[in-house]
Length: 239
Image 1 (cartoon, rainbow, N blue to C red):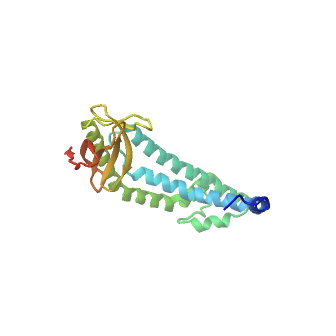
Image 2: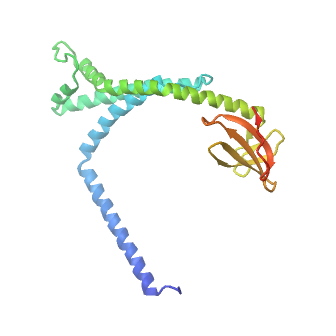
Image 3: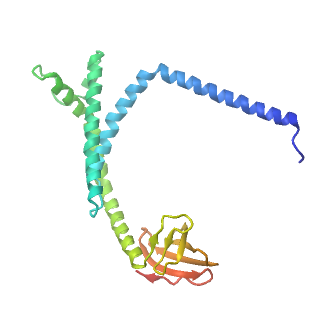
């Protein structure tokens, strides 16, 4: 086909402009709708926060962390406590706003115990309601974290074994793109792909040469070939 006629080009560009105009118009309408319903969106975000933060906080408190990393342990447990406290703070603010706007009856939906005690102060009342608001997502988060523990502990053990494997064969990362690793003989390597049972490297600067790390089904590194020809068999040296 020859060069497209000028009118066809102009028509195509006009069509694109019209499509863009429709999209921009739809975007403006959506923005206007968002502004019009900003109160509802704000309340939804607040409600979502009171559910999400306690859930994530509870999960972070019970899921497993690498035992050889004090920083990971600290970050995990600290983030868990922080998210729970943040959830309590947001829930307390939300209850206060509901009471401020005369919607206090909504809080009775979350009442598990007697909150009609006339001797209860205002701040304790807010805190009790806030704690009841976050109870269910917090408990769910704690349970979810417990379910993750065994799987994460297994992954951390595999990671430790893989680190030892790489150290044994002298495979080190370079932080570069063209040469991603070097082996014990300082041969330059570049990761090519990860298949179901191996990590494949290109031997940089060596024609038709590869290196392979054999993987177990769970991702554990169990053998290394060194640099071999594409046509040769993969004879793995076991770790």
